[in-house]
Image (tube, rainbow, N blue to C red):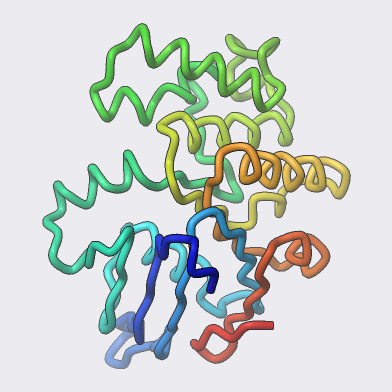
Length: 229
């Protein structure tokens, strides 16, 4: 680790077990991870290895069964649900494989959602949403509904939504999985350019080894344990 950089994310012996019928399934079996600010990390692994579960725990959407998760030196185990909601809204951006956009809203409205949930000033929200949509190349599609956008455009809206609150950590779960090769490359280059420009820490889960090699660090989730490649 670079002594000049701040540790923004730390996982210590993280386990996650899910109940299954009368038994249980242990998906994560002692994950350790230390991430510096502005790093880019790819997490690979076979389908069902627990990549999405790990991202959900990092993003405070799920709590670990055992172990510690620290974000900006804060142990999330000590935080109440309301505090976690504020942390997620202000500190973490999520980009999912299937976009999770609201079809009844246009691109601008979908992008504004996290700020509206955070009860920020509507005029300021709109201006910031327009600026980030322009940055991801969608200034000409602000008022198009989700159904009028291509897959690549929908993913760009999802990225804009994730970035509109200026998060310190961006979590991306198979962000190119539903896209063709060329569009997937464009999305990856967009994420990396945002990392360079804004210093956003990116943790990316992907099956695509070629894309993972574009990231600063590559890790693999094997039998519930995270290993550096």
